[in-house]
Amino acid sequence: MYPNLVQAVVSALQTIFTEDYYADKVIQRLLKSNPKWGSRDRAFLAESVYEIVRWYRLLYTVLGQEPKTEEDWWEMFGVYYLLAGGALPDWKEFSRLDAEQIKKRQTELLKDRKIRESIPDWLDERGAAELGEHWPESIAALNRMAQVVLRTNQLKTTSAELAELLSKDGIETRTLENGGLLVTKRRNLFATKAFKQGLFEVQDFSSQQVAPFLQVEPGMQVVDACAGGGGKSLHLATLMENKGRLLAMDTAAWKLNELKKRARRNGIHIVETRPITNSKVIKRLEGKADRLLLDVPCSGLGVIRRNPDAKWKLSNDFIERVRKEQADILDRYPRMLKPGGLLVYATCSILPSENRKQIDRFLETHPEFELEEDRTILPQDEGFDGFYMARLKKREN
Image (cartoon, rainbow, N blue to C red):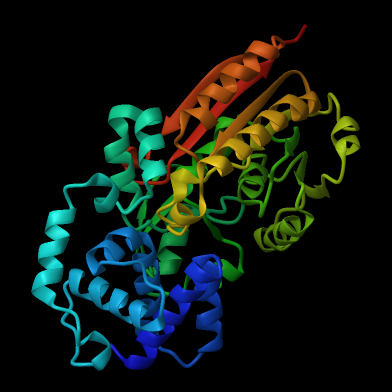
């Protein structure tokens, strides 16, 4: 541990909590502006920032107050480092910290789930109300560090070939189902030849379940109407064997630019991007799609192990707003589907109010659709992200 690295951690935390920046962006910017840092230093910075963000409430409660000054943030780091099993150096910034008292205080606080799991009161209340007996295990699972999973681009290689190629770069993996690889030892994945050749995408294993759930086939007309950066669009195109047409749409045009780059790297040419600028864009596609994916905006509660700062940025009001947006998308976008076509509604949330309850409401008001199957993946189920997906069929008549 070096003073300049701890200072970088402290600066990052102040930016995240006082200027409302996202943790991943702050870390990226810091690493980019310090290219001479070695891999160990970079890992120390990223892990320290993410873990302090993850355990923010527990740490400041042990400390006795929320940090306001730079000195407070240094002490917050000291509390984190002690509780993680480290021994603090004899620096003036840590002179007021008593290791024994800090560990005793932590033990007392662990009895309270809100403090133990380091979440706001409202989130604990909502999680308990919506998930009942599953909530304690779910929130505990969401506080574990996220695993890194790759999706093999099966247009170009197999998971066995990819695993062998990555091992030559010192990256060890374990095979999962359907082309997934769990990374067990890694270096910079994006610097590998395999990544530059488009042999894989980083995509959580739960997220990888969505595209197959839509049951696409080569030659189909498929619409991914909330495509974002396009991870699921690329997976769909792969399952379509690069045959047919896949229209990737989003209200945020800038997100689709990233998809174009990724598609080129993946060797995929059936993807066309189209921003949703007004309601006419949807209307013009009425009855055109064989398959429709609605991976709708959501609270993201199923993926907070990757985005721990979301715990401090989310609110009940935000969830209610996003639920209205989900319902609006469900009401307007399915008109693009042909009779007999399939629709998948998906979220990376674990809240029934964003998931099955939205589907139940939709079916009550849209009798032309029937539910074929739905699936909830809780984070404790297999150790991956929390997800929901429902497949609906549009009746022929």
